[in-house]
Structure formats: C-alpha cells, structure tokens
Amino acid sequence: IETTDSLVVFTHDLIQQGVYNDIPTEERRRLHLNIGIWYGMKVSLDQHSMVGQIEEIDFYRLSFVERNVETQEINAIIGLATNQVNRVDPKSIELSDRIRFARWNMVAATQFAKSFNFGASAHYCRKGIGLLYDNLWCNETFGLCRALHEGAASASLFLGDDSDALKYANIL
Image 1 (cartoon, rainbow, N blue to C red):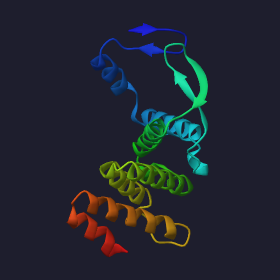
Image 2: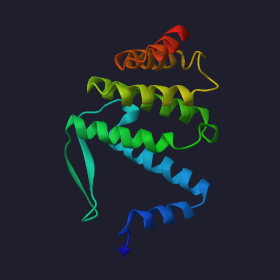
Image 3: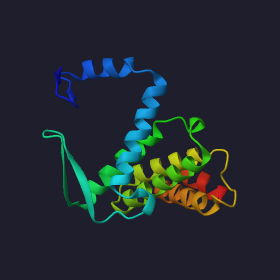
Image 4: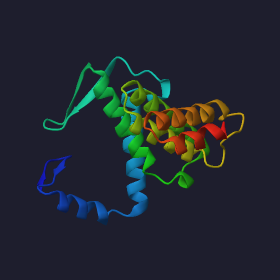
C-alpha cells in the first residue's frame, strides 16, 4: 500500500477489496452517494448541461485541470456518477433525491442511447424506474416516469428483447 496525505494506492485489488469490505455498510452507502453527487456536479447533471468545461481529477498529481471534455468522457463521468448513486438502497434516500437521481438516470440513458449503447440505456432506465418505486405515476414524476418507461421499451427493442420492450410499453 502506498500513501500520501490524501491518497491511498493499493498494490493489489484484493487488498483494496478487503479494505472496502471492512468499511461499515452505512458508511459505504454514504461514500457512494457523496462520490456520485460530486461527479454529477462536475457534469452539471442537475442542469442537464453536458457540454463545456469540467474539472478532471489528475490522480497522479492530485490536482484539478480544467479543460474541454469529449462526449465519450462525459458519458463515462455520467455513468460513474449515476452508478455511484445507484449503489445506494433507494429506501434510504429521501423522495426528492430519488427523483433527482431518477432524472440523472434518464440523462445517462439518453446519452448512452445517442451513442448506440442500448444495453447501458436500458440499464439506466430500469434503475431510474426503481428509484421511483413508490411514486411512479404521481403528478410530480409523471413525465419522468413516462420517459423512463419509453426509454426502457425502446432500448429493449433495439437489443432484441421483445418481452422487456412489451413489458415497459404495456405499462404506458
């Protein structure tokens, strides 16, 4: 294990996994949520603005470098942000944040569909739907819920999964 003031580098992934497993579950959830929110802010997920300047972490020098970001990098960061918040049990997240993160999943699904990555698009639509488990078709989330179901149906159809496509389309 190599350490600096604010960084720990593991020489083997099994050591890293062991340390990760020793972190209490609640703390892990909080860390995943905070990491996801941090990355989400870097690509302005709350504003749905994916183009422009972001700060990139330079892990070797532990500094931030501002620069233009390519679409593939933006998609990777969107995926990273949403994957982190999706690792948290939806029942432990306030409704307003679940709606926020469901929107993030819709943004991720849309970005990945534009890149013809329909597997990822379907995944993010399903995750977004899961975040709204108890509030699916209320006034506040109706449009979002519809978009997530349409996205899941479309992506499933492109993947050749007719049963999933029909499942989501029939809900509409």
